[in-house]
Image 1 (spheres, rainbow, N blue to C red):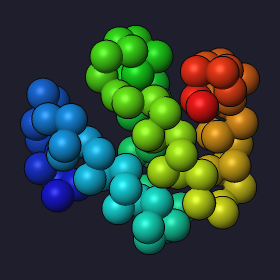
Image 2: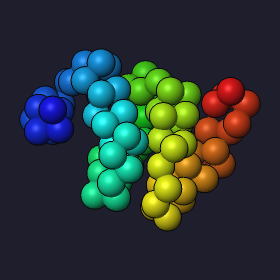
Image 3: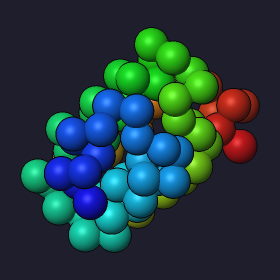
Length: 83
């Protein structure tokens, strides 16, 4: 799934959602670059990602990098947009 997502720059929302949900479920720090690239893509084009779903999905992750990314999202997006 991850390989398909990487090779398809125009991945559907459903595929993208599966990618970040899989990263959250596994709570594997090696998936962090993918999460960071998804957030960077959202910063460039807010239509590329459901930022609320993304944030609340990765909320269960425990690595220091995931905590840092969530903090960055809260600061840059604002909790009012995430609720």
